[in-house]
Amino acid sequence: MQKIVPIKCTKCNNKDSFYRYGKDKDGYQKYLCRKCNHQFAPDKPISKKVPKYPRCPLCGKATFL
Image (cartoon, rainbow, N blue to C red):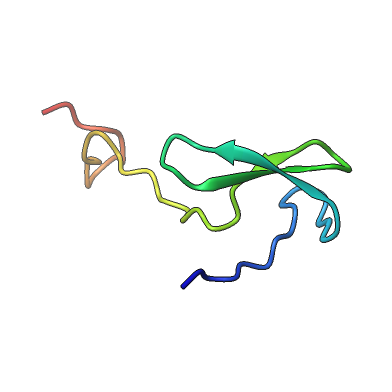
């Protein structure tokens, strides 16, 4: 069973006209907005960047262990 995702351009909030524009490197369907030519994948989860190095508790700078 497929899930239905309401598609809306993340740049111009267009809800009407899109092209299916292939898939991204993770396999999520990409769309191209016909109004602003913005590429986006609406069902792709937004991930937070994990810092490469832990922060120093005193000054907040990255510690290189």
